[in-house]
Amino acid sequence: MNRSRTRLGLRRLGIAAVGAVAFVGVAAGPAAAHAEVTASDPRALAENVTLSFTSEAESETAGIAELRVVLPKGIAPDALTLKDAPKEWKLTATADGYTIGGPALATGTDAEYSVTVRQLPDEKSLAFKTLETYGDGKVSRWIEVPTAGEKVDNPAPVLELKAAAPGAKPIASGPSPTPSAAVPSALPSNASPSAPVASAGARAAGDEEAGSGTGAVVGAVAAVLLLAAAGAFWWMRRGRGRA
Image (cartoon, rainbow, N blue to C red):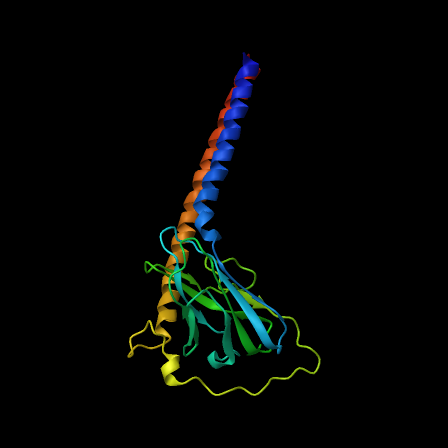
């Protein structure tokens, strides 16, 4: 009888532990989506480099229709050209980067495209802050740049660069983009091109606080479930000892 109770207690303990882990995993699931960037030649001062971007689809109701990218220091909007993109998508220069978009992709389809950069800057890493806009108006903001190894909820795509090749030198930069090309089509003509990024940063900060609060609640629930299971197991062991 006591042996049966002990087995039942162990079984309940295992179920509680698995349930707590599953609950935490489900709650953290939406944060798995992200944006990435890779390069054909990830070296500082490399020329005619192809940058390939992937933005994972995270909406269950609409497809990605547009991406707005803020270029890192050292890459001018007129220093890159579109190489490959979804059908009918076009690239438009902005004051601090570019937008690329067109007909919304099928729901659940990742947005993949590539651009050719005249030359990469002499840096150790490059961050490409990205705003994803879906066909239903939802916006995902991958604009946070982690520092000192910290983890962030909405990391921007970051490209790590190797040291420049021996003898590599910066090439002369081309002309600046024309004013008409510098204003994103999604903005009113009297709006500041940098305004969406600033407001996006503020909203991202709010999202980060909300995510932190959710994580704390999830952790507390998991801890309570595990403690309750452990307590039940201890009580049954104690009863078995008395018997």
